[in-house]
Structures are given as C-alpha cells and as structure tokens.
Amino acid sequence: MASKFFETIRGIAFTSEFETYFERVQLAGVRGAPTADEAKRDYQALLGARAIALT
Image (cartoon, rainbow, N blue to C red; front, top):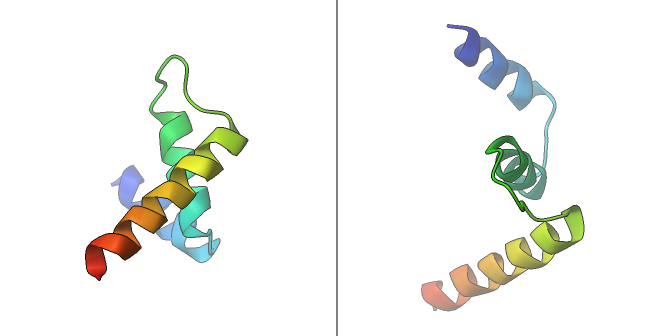
C-alpha cells in the first residue's frame, strides 16, 4: 500500500524519463553504479538503440 502511495506522489512530481531511469539505477544499490554523467550516456545510447529498432 505504501508503494502505491509513493508511485502516486512520484507521478505528481513530473520527473523526466531519464530522472526515473537514474533513480532506479541508484536505488538498486548495485556496487559500482554509474555516475549521473555515465548514466546519461547510457540512457542516450538506449534511446538511440530504441530508435534504430523501431525503423
């Protein structure tokens, strides 16, 4: 129930797709998680791959 509440609150904040991606990467608690700059490069590469897959 608490998770549903936080999902609703998160939606109100209007975070970008990148911010959501980066937050999830950081919250995963994986040792050696990427920095914000590294995550941005990874995310941009992901978007490029997604665009290529759609064509």
